[in-house]
Image (cartoon, rainbow, N blue to C red; front, side, top):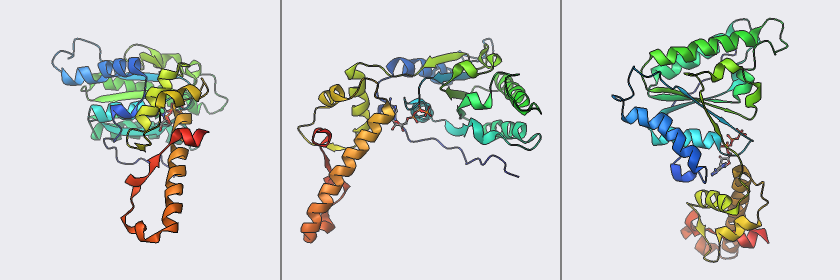
Length: 271
Ligand code: ATP
């Protein structure tokens, strides 16, 4: 009956270097998650465990990417759920889905659960229009599960992401729950975009004339990481297509060619 489909959590493959900019956020998130893992004996029971980090800000700014990078960096299995996926019209199913998620994460420890679109899973109680009170029960179940984490060992974490933190049930933000709020947003300065460009083209062969700073300066100031990703992907595609066309004219070279021969010239592509 339409249970939330859960894949097997595994350690992702997103490196720190794949995340451009956001240095402050990276630092805080590492201190919150990595430090207690590395120094278990220091962060033991005396202190109320900090289980959750909430990343908030506009879409496409790197929240999901960041969560994956933390998991990779700390060798944590990554269990990703989108809020709406857990909501089910059948009575009791949504709460069961929430319980299943935590159960799955416990059996995959060390693990981080990433709740994307958290606002749709945990809206302020009393605000939903569903008459059966499904959403309110889901929120309560989520709180029970999160509170259960602090009794547990230190190797289960939750990271939430939302564009609308104002819609969340406020109980979620109390100490011991998602009590570390980190803003992930767009910065208008060009060096921020340059750092994202650098991260994203790290595996590209760039044309020697490419200046990432000058490209960053040409981008609109409200460009997000996702916009920059689209630009880089288009530039790469354009370069690959040009190479394919040359090979078409000279088929004898085709068998030796590989993706490494694709030289990306973003400036050329932008003009
Ligand atoms: P949403 O709120 O829509 O879920 P999000 O903030 O989680 O958005 P991501 O899914 O992390 O955004 O970003 C989308 C894509 O944009 C990433 O896969 C990545 O390619 C690129 N991107 C976004 N931000 C950055 C960044 N800071 N550095 C490098 N790439 C980025």
